[in-house]
Length: 122
Image (cartoon, rainbow, N blue to C red; front, side, top):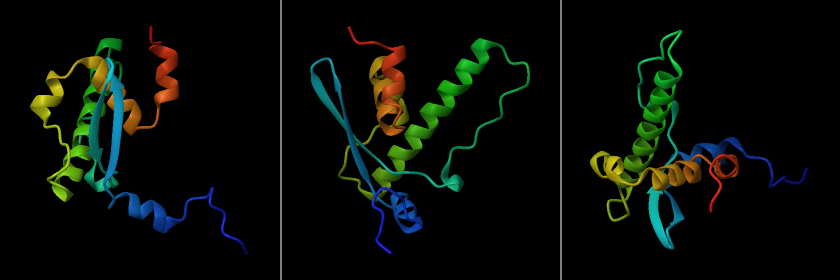
């Protein structure tokens, strides 16, 4: 039976959690480069669950925090494997322009197409 290159094998998926991936996004006419590594469930940041009946503002804050913590954990994992590579620490991440952070999150989480609909460039 021929191998189907459009279907992931378990070995390929497991290897993603060991590989260092590089990403880059365009921001205001320049390129921002970074590295990251996929997380296993055990490596995911532990977050306090969102309470039932949380307001829209609380839900938004919670999802922003979860997203940022996850991206930081992915970048830190890559840095631990490759200290020579580009790494953002929490203090630097929180000081970056929000638009750049959203672009990095979209790139890493592969949601760029969905983001374009919500944040048209202009």
